[in-house]
Length: 105
Image 1 (cartoon, rainbow, N blue to C red):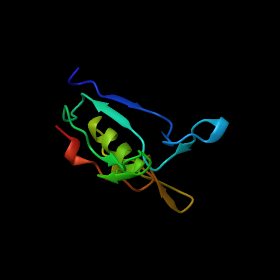
Image 2 (image 1 turned 120 degrees about the horizontal axis):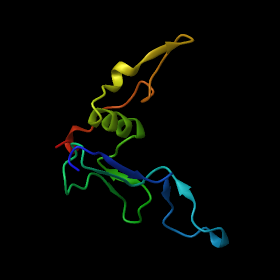
Image 3 (image 1 turned 60 degrees about the vertical axis):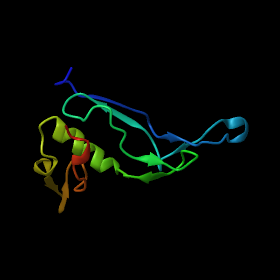
């Protein structure tokens, strides 16, 4: 299990309040992803949302940072995955992203 990286996440966060009869809406300003094994520190909570769970307020991680970190844990350097197309550089982390070294074991 220590070598296996487990990643669990949802599509987006969910609003903390009901939207009438339509239920709760999606939002992208505060959501949860779990990482386990594969070089991640065990028992660590990284980041926090505000008191109603709507917005990330502590150790905010952009999705590009998450992707860069997952690729790093898989042994890949996301900066080496860059290719040029139509005059622009592209990569899985969209030429952004930093590895979140605070969560690495």
